[in-house]
Image (cartoon, rainbow, N blue to C red; front, side, top):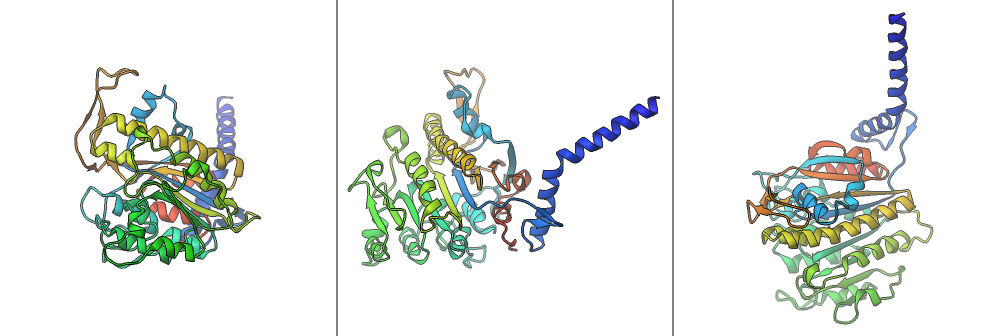
Length: 390
């Protein structure tokens, strides 16, 4: 009798495991097929592909930053809704601690490189970015940042330079890729350049972009034609912090999602790639200012919430949230209460902390586990059904 009960238990367990593992098995098969150069279909099993990707990067956002923001927000964050969570190793090609340029280049191109490098490998050769490839595939593309648009993270998705400080060269690289929508600071690198007399804003207009800026009109008052490429400059140089009045990230990001969904594609067939950066979470870490970190992260989290809402309604969108690195070595110390955090910082720079990756939507399961930051590039490609690049 005991043997019979044991056999029955084992049989039920196996059936349960079989049922519960079907999705993971499909993704594992798909992962193997993609790694071998196939798409997300393997042995007759079809996994739904991600038509769109919304890639949100909270620059400098480690677990302590997320924890602090959650505590100060009654333990409520949209980031906490994710069920699929992985961990990436942010180390650059040499050394333990990455900067934003090498970190974002790893996401954008799938290669480790040296600190300061923008869209180039460790030997300084240019590598095609995922945004550039999506453009070639006919997909709509966009970027939104709370830094200048030529800052290290956004630059790494569209430019190819050995130094992140080559702001005017990075701005010129925007002329080489027909990105459909971009919003960020740094207007002066486009229209008042020191190295040449080019006016890149006029060049954009000749390419039939609609270009506006903070001086002409507030973003919220714009009427945007989704049939035309769009650029908006939020500041002449760096945008101000959220706590001092910057307020465009949420509206620019939600507008981007709706814009890219139908941009020159009213039937919504080709899909889009959108990178959104909460740039100044990092700046708060560098300043060892916990209030600065928290206010920036809470604004960024509102955008995460809108991305998740879009993905739930759309059903074909993969949402990814991660950071290029942690900044400041933030600690929440004893004596802290929900109303008063006692914080300290171990550094004024980045740390070597491992970084969480949060995923939702088609292909999300690919992002669980531990992996290098470069794997995020190929996992995005896998989710879209593209061949893996080595």
